[in-house]
Length: 275
Image (cartoon, rainbow, N blue to C red; front, side, top):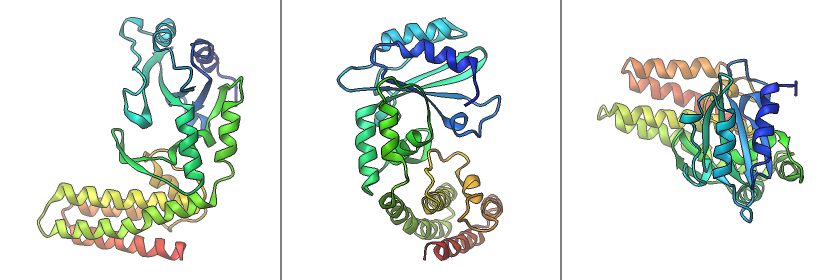
């Protein structure tokens, strides 16, 4: 990873906070797809036995934030069991997202994922829901910035190589819902329930992305851009992005039956890939 003075500064600021076992870079920057304006997604891993000292973390954040007076950090658990908590900072004019992760909970969820057990939970910011396998992807793709005890190295050994049991579980979990959601949209179309139609067809497309990522043994860690990324995977549906855009154009035109039929065509193509 190329030297980044801001990353060095962030690591130095947070590595010494009591409870911080590891600091990682995540998101698009870790995967090499970021650009100059991309956020810095910084994960702070802690253990249950040594809780994260959020008061010291706040002091550290204020020391480097562009606007210390407006800087806050959340308690652990503030954002729910999956996102957990963190902070939104501006440092040197760059957007920095701090994300807490309980390493014990992460390891337990990863072991379940490796065994082919996945869950989906309601989570603000994740319109399709938070899939427990996201934590596998976060670990697989993150870049350790501070890992003195080898915590992240150990977790990466669970995530990589991509488990075949997880591949099968994700395909089983999401493929059936593609057609199920289309059928629900068709029922709603008869009553002109436009919000429900759009929601059902969004879920169908989100499930298609999940299946394609699993087929390619790639971790899907965020719905943002997932369908576009899926369109570029080795095993994919031809003109997937264009076909999805056509679905949304038809929805915008209020022609719901053709929109549903367009998604049925994508579903049939997906079934060919998984047969």
